Length: 181
Image (cartoon, rainbow, N blue to C red; front, side):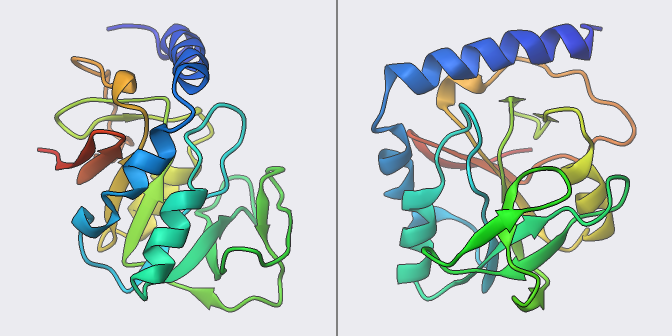
């Protein structure tokens, strides 16, 4: 089994390279928003570093009439919560240093969670940053549909999966949406 620490470092470099190669990838991915699974309340994210930008996708989902929310880390070793959010509303840094809605925003439970990642595979495996925030949250919200948002070039043949790793239902890339086994 490949060491996850080494794999994360390699995939961070890959993602950074991919983000510099195609500045229109996130816009093309957003064109496939209609293909995403149903969900009235959709959790999106604010991209950090080389993560694929979710702004165009957020706008496309809002145009569909879906209500948006963003994840908020309020405790480091607990599942994230989600607060209602619309593009353009103010944000502040949460406990993990990630932009999040202000505390006065309504807490909601998403039906569909769009998650950033470092790598994914066709079996629904997801390699995240290593903090466990999304895995803890997925475990606490098993009924939510989990969709990775990434560059197509982040797909690997087989990811090492551990007991606590929770699989994705699908992935959205600049090539479109696809359900994963």
